[in-house]
Length: 312
Picture 1 (cartoon, one colour):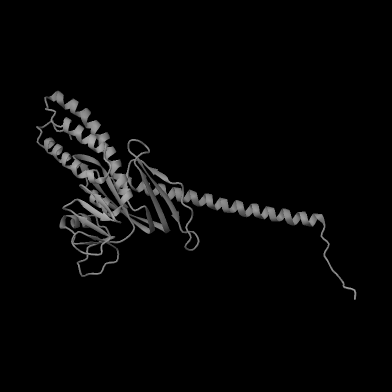
Picture 2 (cartoon, rainbow, N blue to C red; picture 1 turned 90 degrees about the vertical axis):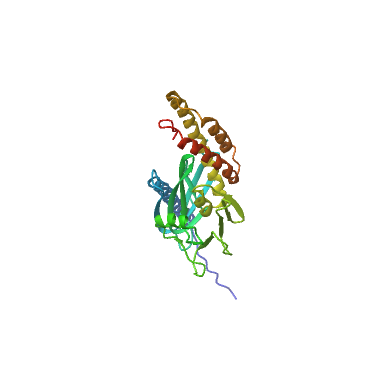
């Protein structure tokens, strides 16, 4: 039997056209993918910068606190890093952004936008569509900076002291609730009393917040930073605030030389120098307690100074 073998004869031109067409299609897909990626990276960078721009209107000035909300178009992730060493002496935070693109997949986060002159107390990653913000001024004798708090979760505050509840309710924060001990509350549990099974435990007596297995010590309005920030973010920003305190302290030292010409007694300078040295060498938030006691002593001396001799 003779078998009939059929085949298609293909010339070199056809083979070259197919190979060239496939290569061109590959280049087109590759270019389109990179173009989309570059466009998304630009969007992420612009969004991160817009979030940073929200911080300026939240500066408290003479106010006791301010609050705001950020509504995102898509479910997103906001990433934060903190390092007290770059941008000396103030340190730096980095904010990066990523949003959902197809289904549950997130775009690649951008390289990040630096935050040099703000102190944002926040978890390392926020995920959602609505971000809550509020600010409280931080004083250590004189005002050092505004503490910016960011969160995306609901919080349930149990056994809250009346003064703290009044402060939070005055900010009209929709993400913080005050259930009684028998009420159910969906959110992270913050306990000021003996309530068990809490995500965050606060001891006002010891100036202590226990969170994620870490002990965070606070003074003044840093209590809110300790409650809402990740432990690493909190400790980093405490060091940055102490750096800022030292820079302001140098300005006040210069001012002492001016008011001495008005026959004012320089009672604060030596104590302020000691306090600045302690702030500069601070390693952990536990040292805040001692430094704050020294700051209160300075504040009392300043208040008792005769008119025209007050440092701040």
